[in-house]
Length: 249
Length: 226
Ligand code: HEM
Ligand code: SF4
Ligand code: FES
Image (cartoon, rainbow over all chains, first blue to last red; front, side):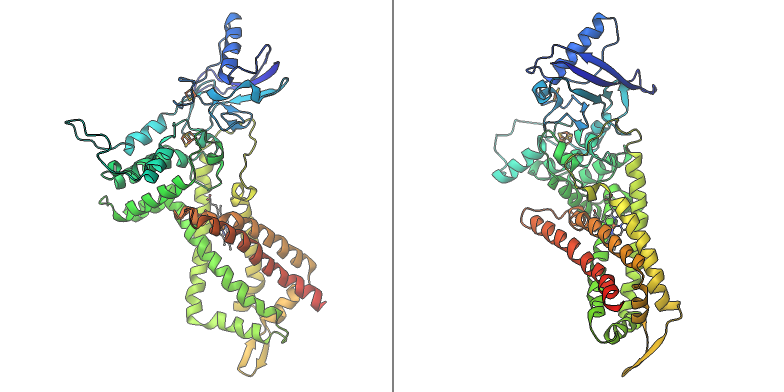
């Protein structure tokens, strides 16, 4: 395949940045999107040019590290992660526009790399459960109905990639935050911190400068893990009930 | 900050205000459209004028009308506050953004609302202000002397620009409601596979029916009176 890549290049956080166009040839339809980027970077390196910086780690769709905004969609045209996107999703001769996630809370570090530490701080604010030290508990000691376990697991599949923020017109982090709050609110292990969790994670999400939710559903449509809007409704319930009931005045 | 102001100034709390004021305005629309259906009654406006008199003098209705004013003002102020936060959350936009499969209405609630607001100002000047403080002629019915708002309405809708403006404004209201109705329930946390499909269907039907009924009034008057 022969392609034209329009890529956002930015030297550092304070650089203004801009699009640079790169023609590329000899791309196989079996390559993953990131392998195509690797080919480009090898060519750039051979020419002694600075390779295009982008985030990635597992390349298996589980770590949430890859993050490219491709042709107007986070993670590209398919509902999957960028690392699981293949070049067969494009046609010979296409122009592909590649940009970083855009949000005040995700500042660009370099080229296509953004700093998603704001997500880490939301998790630190309350996305954990207390456990006692001591002997290893027996498996299945706590009975959890299958349906609840499944639903909590669905929420837990969020890989924290930030595509929901990238897709949202308000750069809102509600799908991510609500998936994390939901996952723990549904399970018995999550009950101890249930109320403070909802309050603190929402407060941190707001402090990071993410927008509010207009319920458009762009996040749900773009999420590679199919996290649903029902999580956001649940987060709102958790938050309202925590506001009314918690001991934090 | 007290827990109340803390909750209501969070992004979710601010949406709660939007949802509750929006739902109250939806209730108001139901009342308003039902009463105004009296314009279709072929009695020279007697029932409509008696109803209008009741609406401006009854103390219970007074309380409701103040709640309506507060809801509109609150809805607008909170929408400005939210929109500012939402815009600030993405200071640098995308070079190429193709909107995904979300509804046009949901992506343009602010613009739709602003047009509805402009309509509201014109609408209130034309009827509400005239009814309260304008020089309206009086008519006599069995019950006594009544302000003849009916004639004011008939007069206003002889103007084709007014009629076209009303119909267009109602189209924008319909769009606003097509997203707003079900969105308000989602904001409240009411999303369940048992009843969410019903809320969605009722929302779409409501967002068509109510604006169409409202729009049919100026159209009916224009064509029957001229
Ligand atoms: C009769 C008039 C109106 C009714 C019945 C109405 C109803 C609603 C409802 C039910 C919602 C959904 C709330 C939610 O998502 O929880 C909404 C949202 C909204 N309304 Fe209205 N509205 C009206 C007038 C206005 C006006 C005059 C404005 C003026 C600017 C406005 C601006 C907005 C905005 C910006 C939103 C979306 C807020 C967001 O989620 O980002 N609305 N409206
Ligand atoms: S909700 Fe989906 S899009 Fe958002 S961070 Fe989690 S996996 Fe990524
Ligand atoms: S690189 Fe790990 S999910 Fe894409």
